[in-house]
Length: 313
Ligand SMILES: NC(=O)c1ccc[n+]([C@@H]2O[C@H](COP(=O)([O-])OP(=O)(O)OC[C@H]3O[C@@H](n4cnc5c(N)ncnc54)[C@H](O)[C@@H]3O)[C@@H](O)[C@H]2O)c1
Image 1 (tube, helix red, strand yellow):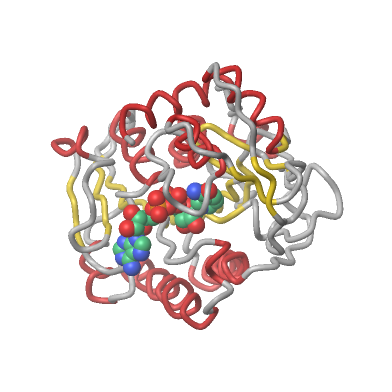
Image 2 (tube, rainbow, N blue to C red):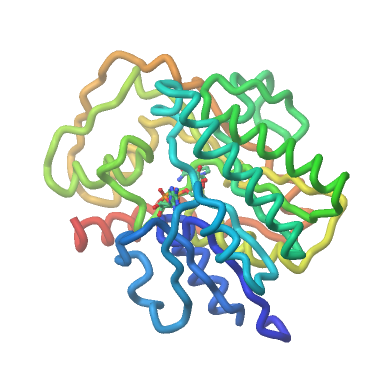
């Protein structure tokens, strides 16, 4: 538990990662303010509605950001208006809604003497095609989608603001988080999308031959380190955050067969151009500096997620 009631602002707190993060912050004794869109669905935070404050507004509106920062010690920036797959359709929109608004946030954070900004970047997109697996933090960043370019630019501005204005920050490049409350109707997140189809006995579709490999990490393991990192100061500001283990889509299907007891026969479709073939993060830095490691194995995580999807969709 933290000694005093420090206040954390969770921008995008009504979403998948933000709601789990709010759970973890509350159980560690922090005051939590969830900031999300006007009239956002409260279903992800309904179980903690009496333990936090909610602020509705627009991340793209300076006035709303200024209001949200009042008395805040730590800011978690989890808002994104785009997904990797959709971002290339309109990079100008991506810049306007994600990059410019993030710069507004940094300026206002200085004015409000915020102690630290925690930014959720993307381990799956900032590196682009990996030259070496597993990928270390110092691997060149050459994103192949606008979403990754914006994440990279925000990381760089955090570095600049830290040098110019002393604004402290930590960046977590998260791999592929999964778990309860991740939207199985989205175009992102193979695990929930597959599990919903399996639950409904629908055909699972895989783009490519199923060899695409990713680093999947259970969400509650993710948020544990996001919160504990608040109290660890380090020269290192940027951390990969994943399981460090690569699994192909075909391997995921094998785990899902075991967990659900169903005979799953995926349909293989033409590969998408935006998927790099392999992405697995090297997590040795976060393990040594943050004294953390993931504890939920993939079978357990998929079992919990499947139960959630069966009950909610
Ligand atoms: N889920 C993943 O696989 C993954 C992986 C790596 C990084 N990330 C990053 O983590 C962050 C959170 O992702 P998530 O999966 O929880 O997404 P999510 O869509 O579940 O949550 C994002 C939240 O931000 C809110 N939001 C969007 N635009 C807003 C605006 N203009 N004003 C106020 N609120 C707004 C949404 O309503 C939503 O509740 C994002 O920055 C994302 O890029 C996600």
